Length: 312
Image (tube, rainbow, N blue to C red):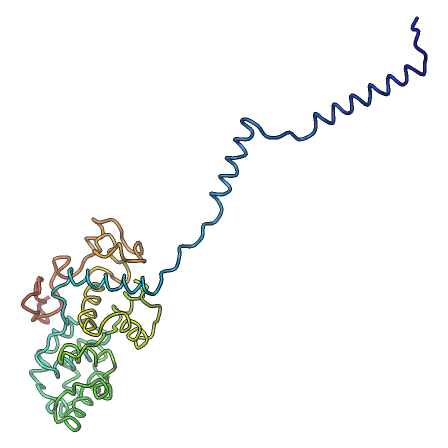
């Protein structure tokens, strides 16, 4: 028979219950991560950090862009040391007419058309006096032949009446002629008179935007921006090199990135075919072993002259 009293037994039972509850609470309390669990937590943190969005690359400064642009020009000069206007001409008048005809068509088609045109109308006086329907028939292969006939007869009359039958060598005078804009004027000034000019055609505008020299779309604004990047002495040849590159390698729809000599300098690399073998199959004109656009190219042109009209 136990000697403890009922009161003592109750106190012991209560104390035991409280002690057990304290032990349970301590066991349930969160513990510091150690060993394997700590390592797992560190890995999770590392993964979370890696998954976090990275900062965008630092924007290219204007000075860095100018340096890159000038390097592109230097490297294009090595690739195309023979770059030239791809319109056949023998004098300023022929170049002016050929450039007007080149709108909305290829230089090749113009070069195949102008021999017959200049045989029929060798001077501004002759062209101003032409029978419109007869001229339209000659230049029909270049497209928009009615509008072009009107422009050619109009500019020829202006040359005859206002400039003594001679093509003026000033931009302000050239752009006043019917059908002559800044692009045409700069082509004539740069290649017939040796006056530096930037020719912003579709190829030139497309490439300078692809190279991030400017995001302007308006040709006059593009011309102004690029003129500020390069010395005036480079303007004419820069125009030829960029156009050459656009026609031969950096095509509008599928540029041959994998065969591009300036790929490391191009912020748009990868827009086209990057596989070298596939890219080489996209090359055009002399770069791909095909004839150029001129029937009478310069002596240093490395490609084959283009065929005459009807001989393709």
